[in-house]
Picture 1 (tube, rainbow, N blue to C red):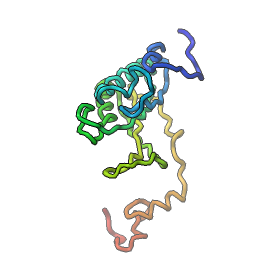
Picture 2 (picture 1 turned 180 degrees about the vertical axis):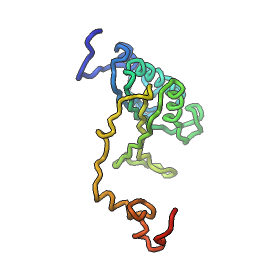
Picture 3 (picture 1 turned 90 degrees about the vertical axis):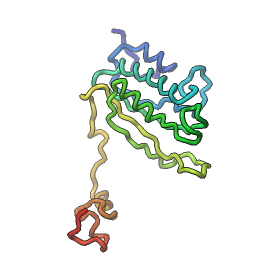
Picture 4 (picture 1 turned 135 degrees about the horizontal axis):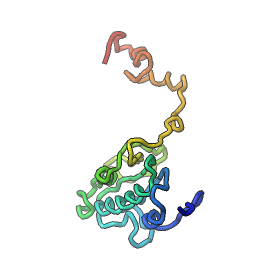
Length: 196
């Protein structure tokens, strides 16, 4: 087997670059492919410039099939994909509706044999300003944890947030929000013996 590139950036069309890698050679993939109809990168045939959201899903599924091929059996994929708003039925939904691109993609990936282990909320603390007045701003995006096998490498301790007494004390501020009293000590209207 040839030596694989390490600590280097492989530039080019993702599908073609993946096809050049040997099977079972990648432990983890972290990716955020182009969202549908959001940006023009000026490249013919680029992801995200398809005629409708279903074509976008089809093209991304092709890329993920190649990722499945190069992924080791216990490997993981961390996939960040955002949604877009339709400009008309030709895009795949009624105008102004979310296209549900991430959800459509997940259903397709599940059909392709991917196991969807998590939908993680990437909360944006400083999101792009929005001038729309008939919906809320898009201040979060999903990150999906995908695997091909029920047994995979996952180090929970590496991502665990350490426990602190200060964090425990804050939980009691909310009614039934946690702590030893479930918040009853801070909300006099809730009797000490009351249970939800």
